[in-house]
Length: 165
Image (tube, rainbow, N blue to C red; front, side, top):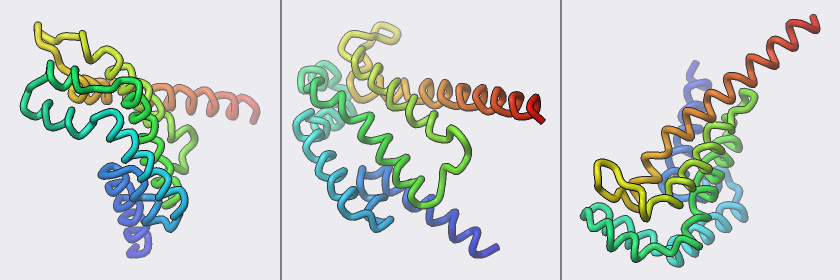
């Protein structure tokens, strides 16, 4: 029981550190080259995309300034880097054994990117949401669609397996 709890705790630790900063989970998993590469890419994309400035401006609800500060060509790399880093660290820690377990995070990366693309002109109740908040609002859509596709694929495979028996 304690060993099982320890493994779950380890996967959660890696997952949470990966959410905090891409590459940290890999470093905890002793995948040093991959971890340092991901941390380096995080810094490059963050700086070139002006992401920290966007975060600060967005928290102050200065959305038009956040949009002006955004370097979309750089920042569009961020969602894929971010969600890949989370998935990779979690998988290396022993998680994600279920078939198609990666799909919710893959679709999250897709939908967060789409949210970023439309963040400069999509409004909600007449208000711009901006390059930080709109991608976050698209995250549950990606998780949900990825989860539904995973569920469908598991059902299809189960039905094919049952039919072959």
